[in-house]
Length: 65
Image (tube, rainbow, N blue to C red; front, side, top):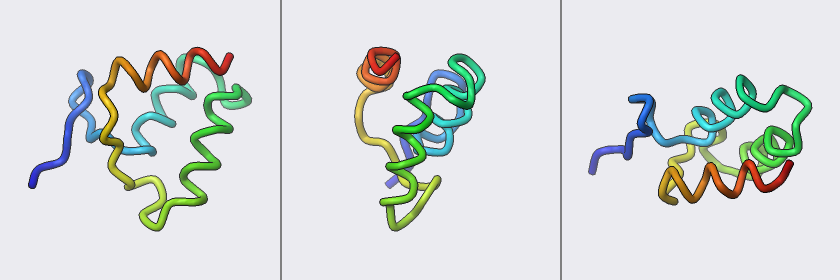
């Protein structure tokens, strides 16, 4: 099974979302803190695949701000 890809071409992982969210919203944003928490809880850390649709993830992350 292949990993989902984001529109940027990156793998759909918690780490990819954190990288993109940090660029757009800043390192101290609530969305980055949320992703940091998810990464800490995940057995695969930043490499945990995100199965949710990209548009749903972006809406959720931006709604945290």
